[in-house]
Length: 375
Image 1 (cartoon, rainbow, N blue to C red):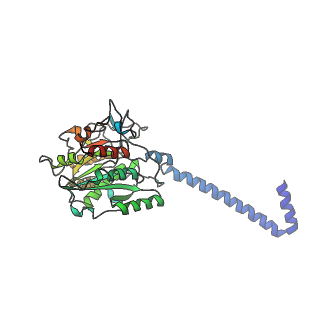
Image 2 (image 1 turned 135 degrees about the horizontal axis):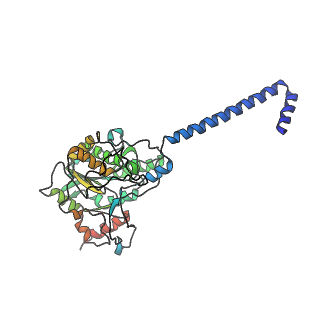
Image 3 (image 1 turned 180 degrees about the horizontal axis):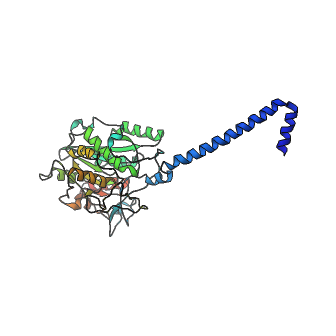
């Protein structure tokens, strides 16, 4: 009522001019309300075609498998690894903070869909015998530095040249990207591609690694995909690769997974739909924590990925590509050398393995120092 009186008084005082202002104000207010409604509906429609932010947050992580009934933490020098019993290998993944706000619309594994932002195309000019490729999240600087100060610092073992590189995806922000570029300038061991760095996209990450090996380093004899939370005994690994009965082509070995069922439970982190992978069991594959292969396979796997429909279990996907190629994963001569966990720290155990999972970058540093100390 008060508003009506105000408009009436103004109309009497200003006449037709103020009546025109009143009409204009009402029109503008109506237009503003309509625009707000359109924006609200458009926002709802957009959200229905992208994955919710909460889902993407859950998807971001650094590795792919977990050992149940075990929690790793930093321990004292006397007990670097907690004792673990009744261990069972399961798919593992550690959720990390969101590193990018880029929506994930679909999952395409073939590396031709991506390009390198940071690259080290000349790293293989010295013809390394073995290339170690480490998939790692952009923010995991501590993990990279721990590897750089331990097994990643080895450039020659048993007279053979080694090369270690880290593969990352998008950082999700200009400040993080700037820090990554500075790290790249300092160490010259980072390769970055323009895919969303997430748990969901580990298959992409693995295939980009294969693409880099095929295009930048085809002359290498062997390569290894090894996770950033791994202890790696290079002497034992090199002894395996230099053995006279180790194949030089179509060879891949590690911890072999046979007859693993595809998880159809939609509430599971490792759910794969029948649309993506219709078979009830995966083909034989190597556990993603660390597998070594003759480098001729890198190009062949990239080619196979053109016809194998991608799904989000990265090491099983590599197994599907191997099946397409007719290549059977090989059991290592001594399967105990590829261990999931060793249990309570015993120095001598680390002389016998090739790989084993650790709980933190500091554990890697502490164990490495202890293993390398003079006896």
